[in-house]
Image (cartoon, rainbow, N blue to C red; front, side, top):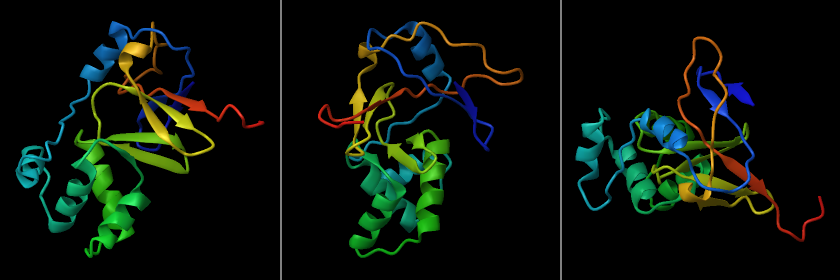
Length: 174
C-alpha cells in the first residue's frame, strides 16, 4: 500500500516472506545519497561536508547517534543529551534529527504515526519490529526478496523502500 506523507514523500509498507534480495531494491537505494558518519573522524568536518553547520548541540547529538549503529527515538536522544549535562530542547533534537535524515546521515523509520526511530546504519537493510517489546532488529538485505514494485502515482517517483516486518513474541495471544 502506498502512503503519501505531508512532506510529499511516498512510503511503501509491505509485509513479505523472507527470501533473497533482488537488484530492484539496490537500484532504489542508489537513488538516495547517504553518507556514513565515521565516529573516529572529525564529526564537525563530516557535517560541514554535507552542508550542515556544526553547532554545539548538533555535535552533541551527532556524537551520541554515530558512536555506534543503533535504532533510537528522538525522546531517547533528548534524555541522553540532557543526562550528559548539556541542555537541548525537544524542538532542537527533532529538528536536528530531521536535518540529519534529509542529508542522508540517518534513516528515519516510521513504525506508525506515533513511533519514529532513527537508524544510524544507513546501509541497505530492513527491520523486524517487535510489537510487544518495541525492539527493532536489522534484517540483512540478503534475507529478503523484493521482485517488483507497483508503478507510483503519476508525478511521483520511488524515493526509498523501508520494509518493516511486525512481529510478536510467540507466547503472546493476539
